[in-house]
Length: 160
Image (spheres, rainbow, N blue to C red):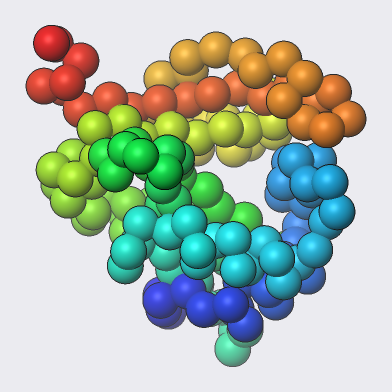
């Protein structure tokens, strides 16, 4: 079941996060805090565009879109993280993203994802959703971890 994301659900998912997501997200924080991640997900959210998926009676995945830029409302960042049940949520998330495609294309000029270079399962999913790998962000993580940046760009904007 897909629900609008709330701090409680985001914090629960963050506190029970699968290893792959923890490695990717925690290396970006000076002081890792699961409740702060939940608050950050909601505070930076594109209004109405953050969700949780419940599986077996518990929140299992959080995902959505955040503003990638404080001054450009058409520049978004997609993100997702989950518990060990995350993989079971991927088909539902994928269908939801596909269902939102027209709204995203209408409201978002640029959508990007930042992903740890060795999180290859995430890369395959991101590419399957149509993102293009745009480059490597060297030493993007606080411990010197490299990340890839992927992007989708609205066609009309890319032709200007």
